[in-house]
Image (tube, rainbow, N blue to C red; front, top):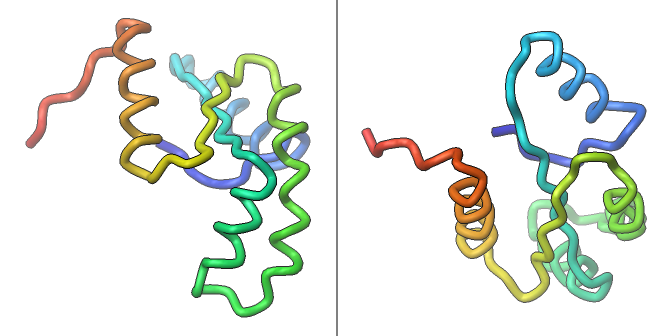
Length: 102
C-alpha cells in the first residue's frame, strides 16, 4: 500500500512505472472530498502550523479524476476506517480477497 499525494508527472508516474516493470498487478484509488471538507481537514491538522500551502492542494480533486485507471473514492464525511473499508470491499469485489490476519 502506497499512501500520499501522487501527482501525474511526478511520484505517480514513478511508482506506477516501477510496479508495471515488476509486472505487479495493482489498483489505484483516488481519494477525493468536497472542497470544504478538504479545507476543514487541513485546517484541523495540528501537525502543521501554516496550512496555506496545503490549501492549494484542494484542486487536486479535478486532477485525480483525469488519471487513467484510478478508481475514485469520495471520502466526504468518512473517517479513515470507513475509507479503508470501502477500498477493502472494492478489492473483494474485484476478486482480490483479504489477507489473513497474522
